[in-house]
Image 1: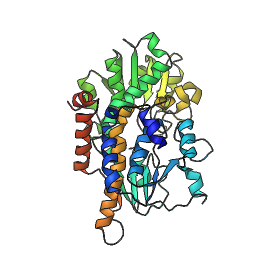
Image 2: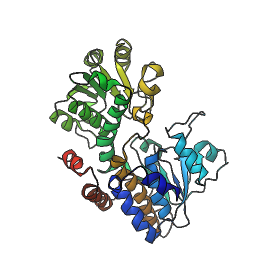
Image 3: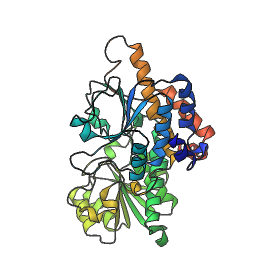
Image 4: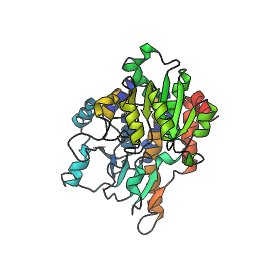
Amino acid sequence: MFLDEVIDGSYQPCEYPALSQLAGEWMNTRPFEGLKVLAATPIFKNTCVQYRALIAGGADLYVGRAYGTDDVASMPCDPAVVALLKENGIPVVSDKDVKAGIVDDDFDLILDCAGQFSFCNPRVGFVELTRSGVQFFEGSPYPVYVADSGIVKRIETTLGTGDGCFRALDQLGFDSHGYEDKNLVVFGSGKVGCGIALQGVRRGMNVCTVTDTRHKNSETDFCHVLENNGVVIVDCREEILVSAKVAEADYLVTATGVKGALSDAAVAAIMANPNLVAANMGVEDEFGTKVPASRVLNNKAPLNFMLEEPTHLKYIDASLALHAALGEQLLKDSAECMVGFPFSGLREPVGTLEQRLLVTTMEQGIIGPEIYNMMG
């Protein structure tokens, strides 16, 4: 199988223990036998490991690629991997094709990312990979598991995304100047923002996080972790202080998950600081229309998506495994329900499933020590 060649030529099994475990199980149980499954994760070499597991489970696999309102792909991908999938008989379909009726909207299960295919009508339901995609499923009549709601996703976002952000900066040559004692401002104190801030701390930077402190004690906020690591927390409503921090910053990264999140004062400070290196790590354009794309690295697209592997497989394996395994859980839920859907709207991951994947990742993967440190 061509996916074996792609994966075995690039990765060691210890980089994807969770997906390897699922693929081994599913070769025998075939939970997706005869089902039309759409996987809309960003198309890169590492996501091929998820595709292989789904195919091992019997899925009639389709890979989704969203274009949004224009002809530019709204979700970054590797064109070479897209071409390879098509050449080997795995359909790569766009949201535009489904909406136009060129591709039938008759999927049994959709593993979505950022709500790209939330308009579809799957027979069984959805699994959404990201927090930013939740908004598209509010009030959905279909069952929707949200992989991002659990602890497994923290491996990817807190460890992997922060790592990817700085690997991209390194690839652009900024590491040659050194990060020691440079000022980093991060907008957002969720999992992604926390991971970026902590990577900055590890590199000897002076880190400030701008966030809405009214949410400081929420489950999705990590201010307490940041403060324990010497990160200065500034409330986003304190515009004079925010502007001052941006004015003295060497690097600025947005990671709020909110489109146009920056205030006019923050935008003005960015435009007045010509030496500032600005980057976005959210799916949406968090800078807003008043900041031209040319002013932000990678033209405002998530900075790590300029890399051949935006997030190392070792960090994303558990997330992709949970994404797929929740699809199997939906099938079990549906089988137990005599009429209609087992539930509608959003639901958090099954705790026992997360725990199993977490244990596998920690015991059999190469990032076990990093996860232990993350969990304190």
